[in-house]
Image (tube, rainbow, N blue to C red):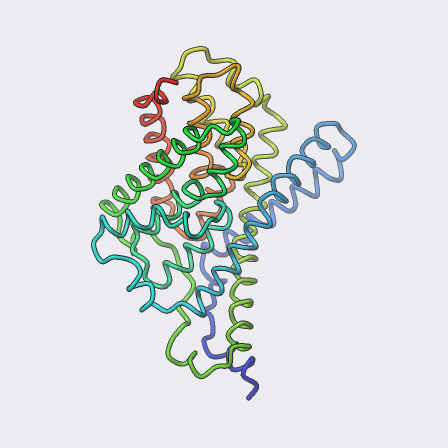
Length: 341
């Protein structure tokens, strides 16, 4: 038999289309598409529709390359990285594994869109829950690309870049410990890809393994990409309907300006390599603490990420993680105030 065919058939996927949740999600997708057709047919010539279209496309295209990278990186992890390798890399203790995972972005610098499919595949390899959460939240901040973009946005301010990475690392570790304490893999994770790497793969030629990795990457891209489309559309709609540029100006005190910028980060759904330039645009109008809150929360929690999380986590975990992350970022920013600068 052709080795490519053998690789493709060696591990059949389970059919998930006959569950009530799958049918409900299919109905939601049809309703979403119907709403889009309605808007295009009746409102395509209005100014606000033009704004919505441009905003949606810009958010989607900004995230698309990173998501492609993440899904295909996840596919290669699925095929070429075994559970044995993960076991050797990740320490056995809860705290050491979380401390290491929160800083993995220094070695694997990926954006928040790219990291979701990567962590999803790592969970299927047996990555501990707390370590996965720490990497998921810390990786998009604690990486050299984000440090560089932050330093450039703030005029070569290395202290600002280092402070952002340090804040992201500490918050990711804290969230990893919290989630590991109150959830198990069974109560936290939704249905994940089956770990299909094993001893049988050793006999396959490299070309067959690459084909399987690409197939897994394409499957993940289609699977998770639907949520990116929905999240980008909601973010675009909110940016069109709400004067987000004026949001922070409405609040004069430090706590309210921090909250305003956190809400702005949640709604804008920017890429972690680009959000520092948006934050820096508020240097003359808002405290540095509010700007830092914007840059720390955005890569951990925004509309497109929440939508993508539904393909990996159960609803209760998403709720707890979202609320806890928001609160911890706010408290940490106010406690640091940010370093009184």
